[in-house]
Length: 249
Image (cartoon, rainbow, N blue to C red):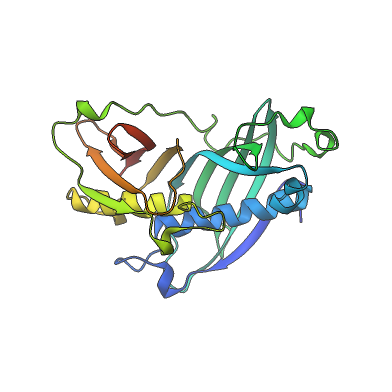
């Protein structure tokens, strides 16, 4: 491993692909997060290590820009690096490269370390024995800025109802019994399709994870295509915003 980044190699299986035989966006998000776990492990603070501090990692925001999505049977790699911690917030950057070393996708993400029970943010520098683990591998930002915040409107501002509703059924849940955040990306693709767009045309997705979805809960997805960038929002129990996303096709 280079001290400047961590890297994981992937192979695109047919079951990883959508109707266009290219890697599904939700799978790319998942591959980048798998690489993030390797990066955290390389730096000495993956989820098993921070569990000893009664803490867990929570992803707050992520942006992925697609240049040339890998397709079925392609081999590619994802490399990631930490730019350090700003009080609460850890920034982690990504690049996906094809077998010839060309960058085919880029990503940026913001994470927090949180209490493993109540998920309240923890200031890492104040955790005894952890502060020395905070490392800057590389200060480069792939988008020249950190992943942005998005604002979600009140549900009353939508002129039409949700385009699709989703449920936190068994296959949507992860190891902590919440909906895995990559499933939100799959839900967004379904919402775009229902609204008449082709998810295979996605070039850029920014998502803010605002609230966790627990087993059995119902989420209504709304699409706003009134501006150049398409917005997709998820709500629980009326006006309780779960995520906000901005998509460029």
